[in-house]
Image (cartoon, rainbow over all chains, first blue to last red; front, side, top):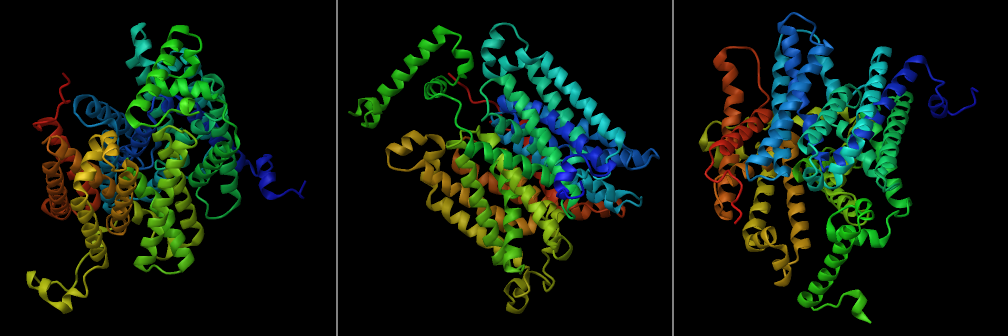
Length: 343
Length: 269
């Protein structure tokens, strides 16, 4: 067996015990982010996740300061994690408030909250660096992630956590799918859309805080966005898409952690993200579009996903109506004949 | 979110340019950063239009991947240990933009002292002039495209072309500011002053001027606070100036959102 290429050997779990622990822990995290990311993407919350991830930095810094002030070690994990969770929740609430109460768009809300919270984190970090206590150096890993030191307990925590995420999503699957594709319909039928949205946001927050140590807060969002975007190419069915996304997330993290383990100077988070992006690129270029052209045109005209339409004849006919109206408008206003009348 | 994305993607460009050219000359870095920014913008557009990935997901996946590539290259090439590191890019290092030969306002007219101006200042001025010129010359076009792209198309202004121009200007601003102020300040300064001004007026011209005013105020007050506040308390701690400036810009925005005359949602009849 010693003939195997070192990467292959690692992928087949023949590396040292520590490396195996790291790879399995990272894979569990990847699966969890893959699952949550699907709904974050479908609810168009991908970049909210980015802001929330950046917003954990002031929390980590405050957690450090609080731990030191209370006489604990600055690296006390529960303090850092609690701080990260608190500021992340604050950021999410701020975005919600700005987007709903002012005239600013959600996009602007996300960008400004991200920048300001992260800047606050940086300011606090510079303060910490001038404090006269040890252990500041360890905070760096929350920026870009480091898996090398992952303990067995941490890997088990990640696995248990990803199982919980999967169970929550499975339990709420029908409701989450519904609000993803037609929130108005869900609201009209008495589903607690706000509550379900909060559930998605809560799951995003949870994976971000848990994943901080592995890929770092700058890149954790890639694990939430890229696997679902790739999975979108392989299936139109939400259930299958979620499973595929989880698999892509897990494989990216697993392979990324393996590559990072065998080569020096390769930050784990960055490698994991690049593997995920490679899978996305592969999906973009090589997977034939599963969607039929009719389904696509219906979806474009109505802004509704065709999974739901196909089961509902009246929606379908009204979509066709919308399509005809669009073609007519094209002819009248642009002077260019729509393709079907060109001949 | 364009600013954030731009800030992240220029990193690999700078590193690649450094590795290829083997120098940290400013213009090499700028070319690399600009190339990377344009490449990423094209990739995002490709993902959105051809591959039909939802907009924010396309942006998010591309810019995180580019940033990851940048971090990886940085670690691999050993640049991290020689001239600059990730933190520098992330947080900026505005404190290095000092002018050692300055003795007072009169130095502004002293040719000898002027030669020792920090190089970032020249680049920032260049960026400012280009962006300001473009906005002044194309103000009408920018306005019509921002509010009514369909109408713009009918009167012969291509929204795509103007859109591409805005992306290029954002990339240019990102590139020239990065070495001086870092990604964070960059994003905050691209978004917060504009958002603050949006709370105060409905007139686009007034908004642009107000935005400029708030940006300036954030810079001045933020820097002053970063330098003076720790001294006032007599502690031996220091605030990162770039971060403080961004936080001040954010505070302006919070104030505007709470008290601005036009903070609410526009009335819909």
